Image (cartoon, rainbow, N blue to C red):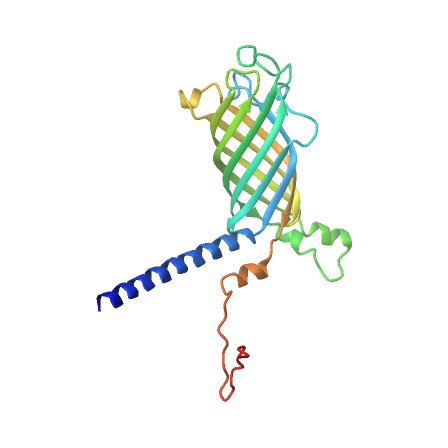
Length: 249
């Protein structure tokens, strides 16, 4: 009796672990096959000694003239997105501060952010998509926008500076103009980054990060997302129908 009880409890434990693993695998699979947004673009760095005081002074910004920022964004649920961004640039001679940078150097950044999209549609443009509409009207009818707040954490590495390595708390705002709704567009974003060090809001590693780029959305595989939760289906038998056995022995 004691052994039977232990065997039964062991069976329940194995069944529970198996159910949990299946649920986790299903969630991971669903996440993988959700839409993915790729962004390639330019970014500018406002990283002098007073980034938050005179942030409209473009002459202070450091940037390179080729695309040097790459972002991958995954859909979590609906309009909630998870964003991974990597960027590189060089400090300009005219933009660095003598007490901050020993000389113009390289700049690397990596960020993991969460953002929430607020879609903005244009009903008057959508009505242009008529059966006999011109190609121009059909193209314009696909225009759309979305605005989003974004926040997260990052890591910044600077060379030839007093603040070589810094973890940052990020908070910003951006928007995307879609030439083809939720498929292809142009996005722009500005983000304040505070160094996670004392004094927190006045740390020397604080700076502002601006970016603009082209975005493309890969729709994923909706069929795989729908089927991931029903991997094993039980055959249904109609009245009077005999199920065929796959066992040949």
